[in-house]
Image (cartoon, rainbow, N blue to C red; front, side, top):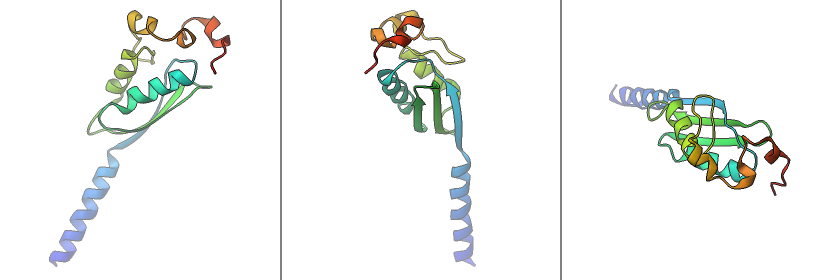
Length: 116
């Protein structure tokens, strides 16, 4: 009986922990591979973020994070602090202006630059 109770408890804990992981996709403005590295690094540095992958062509950031440790607001705020706009947070002008010239996504002419 004790063995059954212990096994049930361990399974319950495992399932409970898995339920806290949330998959989410958000829009993050950027242009190139340098933007990609910066965006993904900012997201991963947020405690509780387990996976971050930003797609250059669509500007979509796919996330897996533990809802018990963080939320989408914290992640978006961290990304805005490194200079990239999200749907909810706009990067401060100083952070945006510190980006390399090819990463200045608010300027439509930068999309035509050679980003390699």
